[in-house]
Length: 285
Ligand SMILES: NC(=O)c1ccc[n+]([C@@H]2O[C@H](COP(=O)([O-])OP(=O)(O)OC[C@H]3O[C@@H](n4cnc5c(N)ncnc54)[C@H](OP(=O)(O)O)[C@@H]3O)[C@@H](O)[C@H]2O)c1
Image (tube, rainbow, N blue to C red; front, side):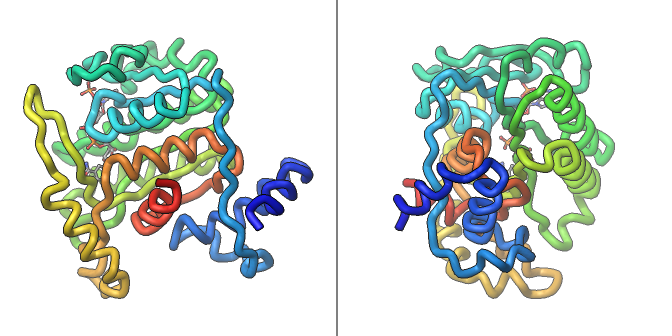
């Protein structure tokens, strides 16, 4: 069945190929997007694995951060040529993969930093975000990413993936600048990259976080919580407190889906929620 669908996709025009894959994997990846695409409802095919061309260049914004470093490592495993842009430049991680990344130093809030880094880049994954005062959170999650999305569109980048965040109901009010920034960047992405823009909305992300020379094993709490909460999806629909039951996902699962979304031309555009991230990454272990 999978082979038959793969052949079908390769024999069709790019638009119908896109529609078919959009219908199949959109239903699979997200509980929020693509519900209107009913004509394809009964098709049972899986997304097609299209390996990226080896020459493909990926720019990871914030590649030295917690999620960004997992994204860089995952992309290198797929044979991509990887560069990163962040304010501090090179990652402090001393692992062999880090030597294969081209590290640029600069800020998404300084237009000059974005001038040349996107030349020849086919896809961008933004892992830039952060906390602080409301105005700082809006700047870093919103304005900085909006600048990057506009620069990518103007340079002719084909696909952009933005690591956003799941809504947390009541918590959203406490982190207003954070969520307003996230949603503003999402809106910019969807308008500039209607066919190549993918938004990942994880809840809590676990894994090993490097803090200076120390490694924080966040998976110790995150993994069991993920196991428990992914079985409790109905709780997620409770009014007000429901979003607090969003299952955590691992940084490597986020990285896997982000790299696939950035390189697979038939990966459906739109929003992938925490359940979509879990499902997709489990299918492609
Ligand atoms: N960790 C979680 O549990 C979680 C959950 C949901 C969503 N997310 C989202 O996932 C993304 C990554 O999170 P994370 O935990 O990996 O954060 P992180 O470790 O703090 O990484 C943030 C990255 O952004 C870079 N950065 C910040 N300001 C920048 C600027 N002006 N220009 C260029 N680069 C800049 C930082 O590097 P420099 O400081 O060197 O610039 C760093 O590489 C964020 O958008 C976050 O909101 C995280």
